[in-house]
Image (tube, rainbow, N blue to C red):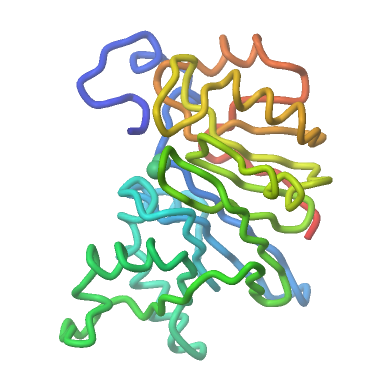
Length: 251
Ligand SMILES: [Zn+2]
Ligand SMILES: [Zn+2]
């Protein structure tokens, strides 16, 4: 829902700490290969995508990967338009990788973009493509990690020594093999109170301990968790993520 949460006047929603202002979660992975050429992959384009892209001075997107098609992860798709025009001039539409179920939702929500009958001339130059077990974008491999979000099968991603898993309520046993050895882990942790389709902070801490990354960042945080106070309660190598956080990873 983002923090502050609409209609709420709790301590976190009224907090003066900028870390307690949370846009909807998303990840931008940037790398240079060769040195002069920047590549950028975005994981999820939520309703705050435009604001986040402006903050990070995003000028190109090579691909978008979707974890699932809930509103807080897809509604900013249309704001790819100007970047997709740049991509098209450079050679082609921006590929949007997602599981078939998520592709169906994206096609419905953005039918004016994806319908074969779409006539809107300045629609986003984007192309939906099913996620493979391993999807390669400019030589960087993204491993699809099956996860559960309540009853809904969703995916996380491993890239290099890092993994991103948001909106998780359960990690199937085989998926632990796919994230074995990650050094930087980003995993969602909604709040302390149980939720039918999100892990609690306690559950995510337990996963983080089992996975054993050098550093774990919690994301998709509800307004129940204040930044400072929660961080004080966490093990030394685990922290709440915050908007604009930048973490080096090895690809
Ligand atoms: Zn969700
Ligand atoms: Zn979500």
